[in-house]
Length: 252
Image (tube, rainbow, N blue to C red; front, side, top):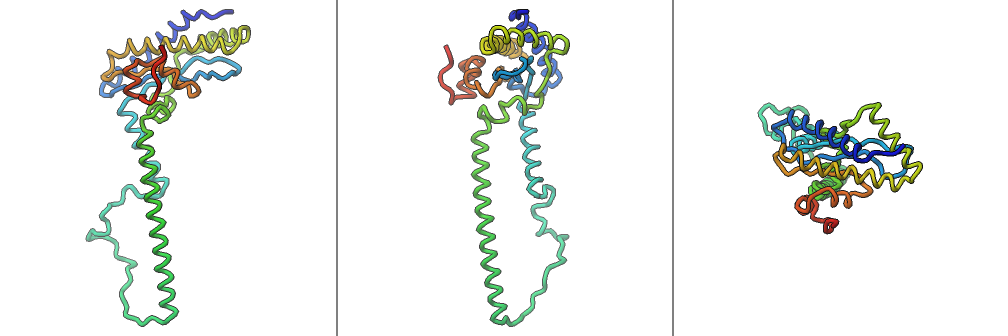
């Protein structure tokens, strides 16, 4: 059994367009910036799957990042609800404060005090180092925040991350047909033809959905092993310059 690639492209395009249009229409207040087809491995496996659809908006990305930051602070044991000026408030808990007593320190007591001072200095130095490392880490995260390998462009991390485009038995029929073709004619040639189909769908989705979005929609096929090549095939030259200036010139 062969594969009707034209029919497959149309089936994926129609299903993806319908699902994406529904999500966008249900959230008119959000700015959708990207749509992706993903979940199809280029590595040889037992079967060739149908792609998943993913979308994300600027607002959803920011909300998810804030939630992730809050979870990280909780894991570190930081109390997010504590008033920063708690100690200066009139109702601050004064229990446990020690009264000052004028005593004469013995030599041993003086040495103990000196040791405690040294330990305190070491703790302060350690805290300073932790603060510096945290600042460096934050700067690195800011620098990578919009790179292709950040959550901004990783479909599996998006709010709408795994929309099935085709239900069984249709999905299984297409999968079996492509897997059978790969068995007879070779995995590489089959998966290459399949990805050619997915790229065509992504280009079509960008053209058809751009009029429904408030920003220039980035539509692409996501695969870590061939990320740059797929971006160059799916995006317009202007989008490449705007979002991924580090990439080489687009494929002609």
